[in-house]
Image (cartoon, rainbow, N blue to C red):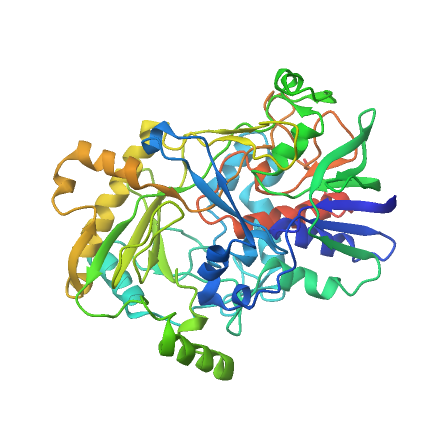
Length: 531
C-alpha cells in the first residue's frame, strides 16, 4: 500500500494545476493519477494536428449518450481527453473564460465566493498573455496565451463578413465585453500547444514529492466511516491519502467515481448493490453542454485546408514547421469566431466557431472538397441531463442521458444562430469566395419548422460537459460541493473540475477548469477561504 498526503484523481486541465500547486511545498507528498497515457504523441503538440489525435482515439475517449429525442434519436457523442493534460491536450486551444455575468450568476445561485470579481484575479495570476496586461489580463503566469500565429484567408473573410452584417469587431473576448467577432487568443507558445501538462506539470514533475501515475483508472474512493482515506485502482491496489482525495476526472467520469464510491442518489446506488456512504441526490444530475448547428459552404476555389494533410503538401508543411515554427501547422484551425446576442438580452447567447474546411464529426463524415464551416453554438443551454451507473463494473460506460435540446428554447436559440450564420455567409466578403451553400440546403431557412428540424438533425457537442457535481449553497438539496469544493457530508474529499459548475459558462471551458483547479489548491493550502 502506498501512502500520500494528497491524491489528485484525474490528470486533466484542473488536475495538472492542482498537482503542481500542492507539490510546491516539499512537505506534501502528492500523487496524480491519470487513466490515459503520457502526452508523447507529437501531434498533440503541433497546433493544427489536434484532429489527428482525435482520429487515432488513443488519447481521447468518446462518450456516447443514450439515443436523444432532441437529436432525432441520435446519441450525443462527447470526446474527452484520455491523456496527461486531459482536454487541454486534445482541444482546439481557444482561450475563453466566459462572461462577467456567468460568474455573477454563480454568486446569485449561492456561490458568493465565485463572483466575477473573485475569479478574475485568479485568471490573471495563471495567465502569461503575449499582448495584453492590466485590469483583465496577466503577463507573469505559467499559461501562455498568444495571438494567432497564422490567419487563414477564410478566417479573415468570416471576420469581415460578420462586420458587414452588423456584428462589431472585438480584439479581446476576455476583456470589458464579450460580444463581437475576431481571432481567438489561444493556449499556444512559439508554435506549440501550451496544455496544462506543459504549463503546470512539466517543471513540477522534477520534484521528489510528486508522483505521476498514468495508465491507471480510479475505481472508487475509500472511506473510514465518512472520511475519505484513499482510492481503489482498477488493478485492485489501494493508495492511501493522509489528508485529502480530490476528484478531477471531468464531468462524465467524476460523478461515476462518486457513485461507485457510495455517494449519490441512495435509491439508485442500492439498485446496483452499492453500499451507501452518503445520500447526495445531485451527484450525476445537472449535466450541461454546448451544442452547435453548423452552416457550411463550398468555396469557388481550392482555398480551404482540405487535402493539406496529404502527400507532398503535408510534407512541405511539416518541414516548414520543424525548421521555422511558422506556417499552416501553427494554426489552431478554429482561428476565428465570436459572440452574438440573438435575443436582445444584453448578453451573447451564441458563440461561433469557424473552420476553414468542411467539418465532420464522429457520427458523420465531412463533405468532400473545399469549404468553410460556421458553427453557432448555444451558450447558456436550459436543457439538463444526467450521468448514472449502468453497473458496478468500473470499465462499463455510465448511463449517460444528455437530454440535448430537450428544451425548445435551446432549439430556438440555435435557429437564430443558424440564420445569422447564413447571413454572414451571404455577406460580400464571403459571398465572393463561396460557390454554394451545402448545409443547410438553400431555401430551407424560409421555413421555420424545417430549420428547427435541421437543427435537431445536425447539432453536435463542442465538447464542454459540465455541472454533474454542482457547487451550491448549504440549503440547496442538489448541491454536491460547497464553495470551497468539499463534498458535502463527508470529510477529506473534494471535486475540482467542470463538474462543479452550477451553470455552464458562456464559452470554452478549458481556461475556467484550470481556474477551478487553482482555486481548489488555494482553498486546500489555506491561501484563500470561501465566504
